[in-house]
Length: 462
Image (cartoon, rainbow, N blue to C red; front, side, top):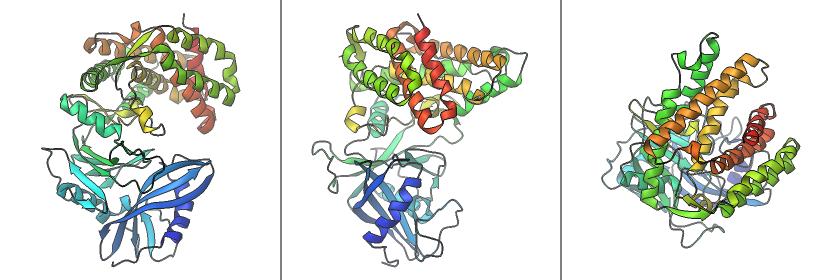
């Protein structure tokens, strides 16, 4: 090797300090009690840099987690001011995130193009997919649970940071939707997998290879759904004398088109993965547990607990509920507006949930509720700490208009209108709002009024 690798003991010390500060680390604010390198393989041995692939096991509050951590070791840092090394200032060699090394990122796409097997990692292309040209990747900023690299104008590689044994639903459902030629998703190009679990105690011998990354079509110039919605709200607030439908950036037509796109995804998922039913009592078991946990953590919810249980009880007594595979974590930030259509992205579900749980068929009402809550957030987010009755009225007008438009668009494609699903959609929307209350109380206490207001409004509905 041209660059001598840092030994395991030293690397563990570096990782122990570095991991808690990464935006994709799921254990923020909790005690990191153990770090162990489960697996380590060389991806690139270059004269100036050594790029390695590490699987790192940690314990957070006594619970095991496994992370995928590509690392680069070099004599000097690359010319990227965002590259924060694991090693202290002045150290030589330096160790840093391998996804920020241009030669390392080029090696990833080269391995994918050649469908190589490197250190136990298997790089695979979808049959018929074009082999990508060697190129250096650009790391997208602002993500949370994963890291994505863009190559050229048409390829994105997503690296799943929190690793669980088995096939990741993002690859699984993209492949299923590709078989249906669903227009509302980006094309799957390939993936990276690993058979050897490196001694993972949670590994299931029947789970199959573990997905480490996926490659898919990148839609250059596509607009983020959340950014579009919030821009519409800001423009409405700036026009004091206009109603929402009179503002040039009125979002309702886009909400309607988005509703149609989500319905198309649901119809294709049902056809590709199979539709079945689940008992309503089974569906609300988790909702009831989350309610109890939320009330224990956020005392302001105690006064809503009985009414919330009544909502869940109504679903529990409703009998069989139609279910199929769904997105599982849908919100406006998981949508892109391409020039000719809406695209739904990130089908891995809630990353912190066990993989088996994320693959359980669920009601499409879960995804619909996620978008409805996201529309409410888009309308309310600039009013945190603002006491202006007129602006709050305009925010409600925007939200209600776009909720109706989304549901109308959904009904244009599906054989059902979400507004007719009654207690079921109400329960999923309430469950999501309760989750948001807990999240905001932990991370942004000044925002907790947004989901608390939603809980009150949902429970006030007759």
